[in-house]
Length: 165
Image 1: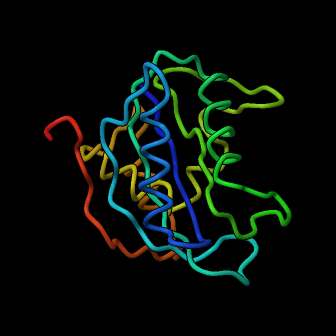
Image 2: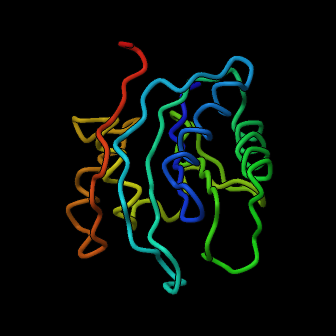
């Protein structure tokens, strides 16, 4: 199954955190990062008294089922020392399961597609790097992106397509 994961960080060496996160995802059996979007610097949403974030999305192919993928994401966050002290507060690493191909669910532990992704430029702009035609797993992300005002994002690094390396 293919997944879109959102990666965010605003503590420590943000670029290194993203690179190490991608390495950790690739160390998961039967799981490969296919493409990493550009990396964007973004202002925090919600709790604003914190450093700006670096955000990107990755397109991942994996034999894991969606709840297993969520467990992998939470495990990697924990391995990096993620502490959930303040809602929307600073974090060394945040990995969100944004979409899982045609899979849709709303359970206590997992809502897929991610419930707030269509309201966030820092999610949709990187997704457009992965799906340049504006359609992600059948969803017209380009139209949602056009309806978001504000929420500036600054691209600081271009995307990487691991399929052609």
